[in-house]
Image (cartoon, rainbow, N blue to C red; front, side, top):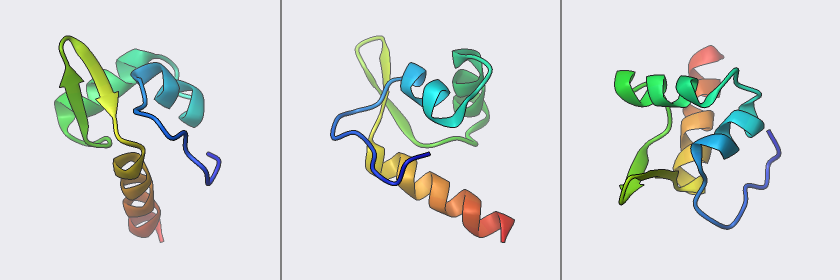
Length: 65
């Protein structure tokens, strides 16, 4: 993942591309299990704040160290 995240809210498809995930279903599984980055709904659309995604990545790196 690049150190610079887009300056906009991210979609599940963005996360699939950034993390090379198998499908958007992985993102929805993370949400159901509360293991992925914090997301929020805009109507029926799921979005992620890039700051929350970065914090989640940092926490995953910290746990792995």
